[in-house]
Length: 422
Image (cartoon, rainbow, N blue to C red):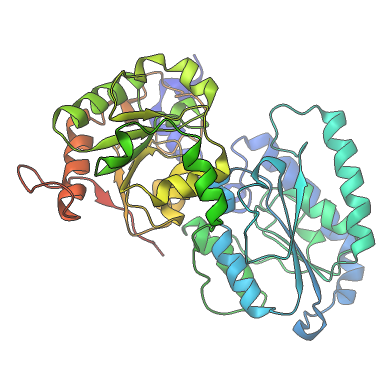
């Protein structure tokens, strides 16, 4: 048993103490120390050339590269900033490097002109180092050939910063919170106490831009909509209202409300006549949670039957999203769907919640949050285990009552609206 397991306060305080913690995002102090040494050495070597760094001239920006290759939620929280970038540079070509598996979702985007998919990127769990280096090298050659005027890394990742520098991009903007800040031409201080959507905007504001970009819903064609619905076993489901879409999984086990509680919630919703249910998730998630399968015409089990790009179509036909803090929760918020989200102590919900005033967060405060761990380091997982089925159900019922979808009776919503935070 390590020291953080013995002492929950240490789990919480380990991220909020010391000089290096304020400059670097690493959880482990050896990595923070190495990043500081790398930056110190690099700054000394580059000092004689600092006078050669160009001042940003917006009139010369014709070709812009944006890098964000991590998860769905991170990408969706970047889109408002990209809408602002498009407003500021309406005539420039904007290219976005994202994970290949997100390309279908972004096919109808309006904020960028071109998408570059990166399959074997740094955050891909199924890629070897050789695959990552090989594909990264090929993309680097493409970067050099395109001659980008401005490169923006919203994550603050050393590997992306090196990539932009080696790609000979003239203006390079980012936060440098994992090292390599001396390679950037524009590096503002990272605003640790801000929501990620605002953090992304702050980076653009440091380049002289002003205003806020909007979170735009995803669009799709009528043909895509018809193809999606025609392939589903609708039975009675399509005629029942209200319609709830429920996602019982998440990328980390530490972000998952227990499946047994989801099962109890489903039974409660059906017993109380609160509408029909569409279950979403991957086939693997369905195999891991077979107890959620229900032989009821009011439950449409779409786990393993829908693609990522299908979710906006489904969400637009539903009245409420219920699920863990995950990519689909962020997507539901982007579509303007009311959402009840079970927020664990993995991340600080104030800075990472889905960006919408229509999100109701269900949470239980524990002293060890945020732990930033894939699995609860203390073993009890109280941050979600102690979120009761009753509290989630009463919040769902209250939201549906407020929307006029079910008769008003009993308790009102008990979840706390998230809302955009400054």
